[in-house]
Length: 206
Image 1 (cartoon, rainbow, N blue to C red):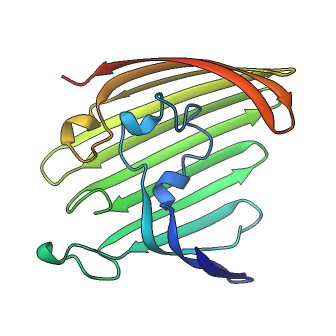
Image 2: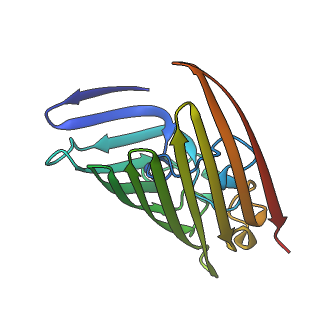
């Protein structure tokens, strides 16, 4: 990516996670593993040629982000600068994180997705919850993800559960499960090193 940052906030262009994906923060404790929530809900997009503007943090807590994603499908008339859009507003202060995001046509034409997230961090505990609603122009479905982590010395114990019917809309090739349960354990060896193990059980959508 290439961009500018100043008193006005920041603006950049390039390949980047959409505001919808970024709003999840650390709620997905099994990101990039088999337990990644992208297998049960949509909106987990990293797009090329994003043009994004982000405000500075207001009062040290509030921030808004909006991204325009040019269309690259001339056959279907998608060639405009803002054929797809993704936006979010977040609050992050004193261990409490709240966010809301909205995608329009990012996962396909006429697909609208709204996501609400909350995360609470207090000393050794981390609790997170995400709720999502997706409309493909014909049907609407919901999904949610809840997660928790507990740190005890060099050990971190993690658990995550997700339930969704969004897979049935066919808005993403990654969606395939109706429920997912994951547990994991991390052991910190050093500042940049850890060993870890996890187990994920997923129920395929009918």
